[in-house]
Image (cartoon, rainbow, N blue to C red):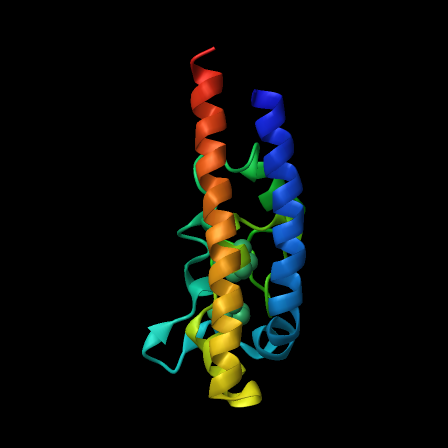
Length: 148
Ligand code: SF4
Ligand code: SF4
């Protein structure tokens, strides 16, 4: 059971990462490199809190965050951020894989128009729900493991 769940999580995670890359890569490239992590001076961008939230990894989502921090030079002020995220998509937390900050949202509307934003939003919701399902599956897997 544990092995089967592990395979399901792995396969679906790979698929969802591909989908999130298709949806976000262009817009991430356009916006994140110039980002000051502060959206319009009122609401802060999600990456502002990278340090406080340790890259938004949930409990047990990653085996050894210390190694990841070392490998990608986690900064004590900027976290994994340096003109965009230093982590390749497949190494980011599930939260960072689906979350669309206000700055990205504004940019999608500016570039693609309000109608396209609705389409983008629908896809984003499907991806977010998919990742949320994976988070639940991970919890189930851990629960099974702890009761073996
Ligand atoms: S995801 Fe948002 S807060 Fe993070 S670098 Fe991109 S635009 Fe800035
Ligand atoms: S891990 Fe990357 S995407 Fe996530 S908050 Fe940190 S810099 Fe932003």
